Length: 260
Image 1 (cartoon, rainbow, N blue to C red):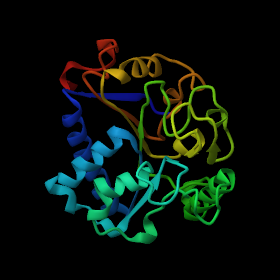
Image 2: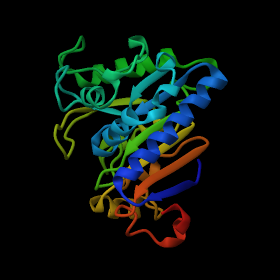
Image 3: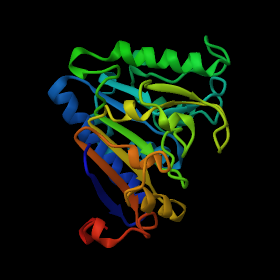
């Protein structure tokens, strides 16, 4: 378990731009050392904001897009192409405009896909896809992602792990179906905390006043069942990327003034 590090930016636009630059560096370094990189994307306004900032970044083409494996932390279990699906939004923000290898883009199943409307079978299929991608060096049933990004919800949820719901209590499976999510749509597919913790680095994104209380709770020692964001951490690094509004309820002792 890595101790959370905090970086606080002036506003959400600067946060997105800085996070995009940070991600470019991380991916390029991984490709230089290993030949490829593996990243888990997140949806929501902060995740999509980061992708849009990456699309506009002059250095984006430093990435070898054909040697980048992309996964998702969660997905709304809706038909293929639905505008509310994270993969659809990611395509519009960035992915449709870069030369990715389609075989390396691992979208989560849709509700009209080969598994039909059976969300549990769809989740198990994604878990199997992760297992097949893991090598002996990964020491587990998922690849050791270079960066896994998570948006933090106002209720402290990450991915589709909501406080007190069964998915956040999962300790064995790497991917599960979610029913009865408190925000629409109620049916989803999500990575679990064991899968999230396989990442080398976990980045938690929070911007806006509506995220301030969630950040304060998650970083104050709350339990992961009540505050799932508190249970999201990487093997070597856990990085909270916030804007000033989201950090407004945190004690200044948690981050140096220079990071603002």
